[in-house]
Amino acid sequence: MKKICIDAGHGGKDPGACAGGVREKDIALVVALKIGALLTDYEVVYTRMKDVYVGLSERARIANRAEADMFVSVHCNSAPSTSANGMEVYVHTTRSAASTRAAHAIYDRLLSASGLRGRGVKANDYAVLCETSMPAVLVELGFISNDGDREQLVSEGWQDRAAEAIAEGIMEVPE
Figure (cartoon, rainbow, N blue to C red):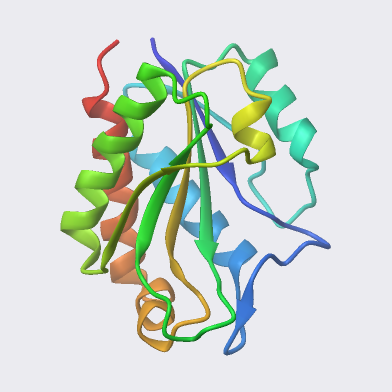
């Protein structure tokens, strides 16, 4: 059985991005748990299942110790400009072929389901992508700093669609 590590970004003392009374850590946790619940044919490992702080290196250690086949980190984006909007998916700058395939599968599904502008699959040296030993992606669901994106991010129906799209993207990735 394929093992997936789902990482809900931020948590506990670290709220992540905040705007309009909405905290990234809350959106990330809700969507991460929804993704995991949909992956019924997978063994799912979570870095957190409640509002607790887990350091970045510990998140990677959880995935590595579990010998997960894939790591998916869930976040909301933010920018100084409230006009910045859309969703994007990140891989590590080394861009392993498996990570890139996973990122594109998730991105394509999320782009179709989210109704948000697509900003592409990008590379970055985020700690959780650097320190994990399996294919890893970081999903930015939308900009919490943008009124339109935030309205979607807090909608339970939108969260369900986003989680389903991400789960479908995960399931599309070959063994």
